Amino acid sequence: MDRPIDLHDYQPTLPDNLNPLDPAELATLFDGLRIQTRHIAAHPYDPNTWLQRGITLMKLRYPELAVGDGYKAGLLAGEALKGLGDGKWGLGARMGFWMLLEDDEAEEDGWEREMLRRYLDGLQRKARELVEQNLELWPAFEEGRFRRRKYPWMPPEFASRGDEVLRVINDEFKDNGGRALRNGTGQICSVRRHAFGVDPNGEKPTHDVLGVFATREIAPDSTILIDQSRIWGCNGPGAAGSLENLNGGMGCGEPIHPNLPSEDTSLDLRWIRAATGKNARCSLVFMRALLCAIQDGGVDRNSLSHPLIARLTPCYPAERIHRFSLANDIALPHTFLRTQGGVDIFANPFFDTWVFSTISSRILSNSCGDPLAECLSPLFSLFNHSCEPNVRWELHKDHRTVVVRSVGRMRAGEQLFVEYDAFLSGEGVGRRREGLWRWLEGPCGCGRCLREEEEEEGRRVDEKMEGVELGKGKEWDGGEKPVL
Ligand SMILES: C[S@@+](CC[C@H](N)C(=O)[O-])C[C@H]1O[C@@H](n2cnc3c(N)ncnc32)[C@H](O)[C@@H]1O
Image (tube, rainbow, N blue to C red; front, side, top):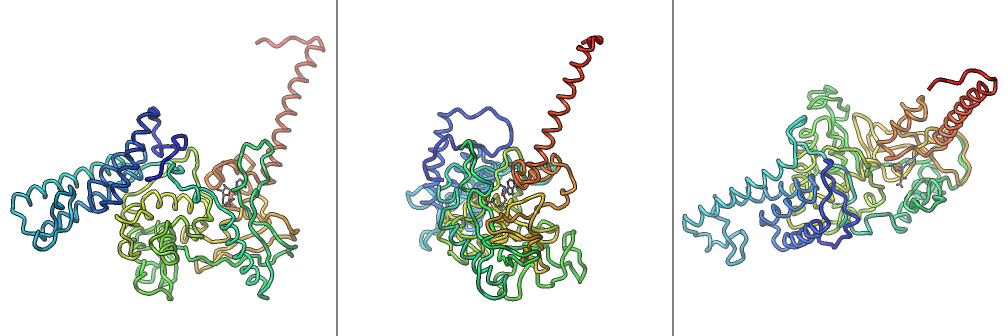
């Protein structure tokens, strides 16, 4: 957030249709945001820096980010108040912010201590007010509404997939081909750009539209891909051997889930399952995505640069309104990062709330699953949808392995398509497109939809022509003119 931005890239995430912000006011707010972000970097444990930036984010109409900063301000003020009780917190000498005191400084007189307590109390109350202003208490307690948008300060390297990302993916396809063919050699498919062709008018950029293509002829019913993921989650087993999840909803029969026997006890994720109930699978996918970034890249790199996250196309649907929850989307990931990720959530900018929100926009249109389990597959997530698919897929009982098989014979160079929602295949093109909109953020561009759209258009033109012919016929026949 401390990067200069182009004001043309600004899109608020608040769904309310308010009057647009005046450009001069917008520029001032973004200047403030930059300064406050630098101030946070210099004084990450001062609750007031977080509160002030949260207020700016609210004015800029980013409710989900304002809640994130308000939450951190409240947390810091609360921890400082607790520390005050222990005699450990005080005003940093002539520095104007609150800090941990050296032992000999801790002997403050009662008056100063009382002043400090009141100040922190006030900050905590204002932080809570900021959070509440950006949430609603109804219909769901402590949830807010927002639209998913690209944040204007997003560094360009995270905004689209570079050639290095494609190289990594294609190396993985090469390894996977060997496994699927069971003889250890040979590639079956690869990822390519311009998956739906190049826009003839040059209006839509198609460079960053990826798809999976056959690199050789594929026989019917062949295994094409065995894709195992580290980013998965399931609602876990129920209590006392029942299949019910702890908080209702179905559970699976694996006693160790949502963990694996190979994971050590420091990665016990059952508390996330208990906290999120029937949404556990989605929260677990998100936490595991953060965990992957930490395990592979450490805590000093932006998690958006992790190859498993950098390869995903984000979902920014124009009209759809999403909900975010203070408990599940803000408090839970921060607690997870502090307790199990080893991340300092105040001093480390790589796990800021805008990064959370961007990761979850990428997971949204790329994960697959069912009411029990969710999985973000590294290679399967690159397959496009068709209403007449040439491959079929299955999520294994382990909730993290997707197997893809061919339906009929395929030529080298043919694009491999899966069906995202098989329940829609019996519907007409209009209903199918409507149902698929939430996955595709636009009309389905598959061969069947384009064909049926053309047929429908043709029928409409024929009907119109028929009407014209009928009208003409009456006139020429000397019949009565219609009364308008
Ligand atoms: C799981 S990803 C597939 C890979 C993606 N094309 C990419 O570039 O990374 C799903 C996204 O691909 C695009 N997509 C997939 N199938 C499509 C289709 N039949 N028509 C239009 N867009 C499609 C949509 O943008 C969708 O949100």
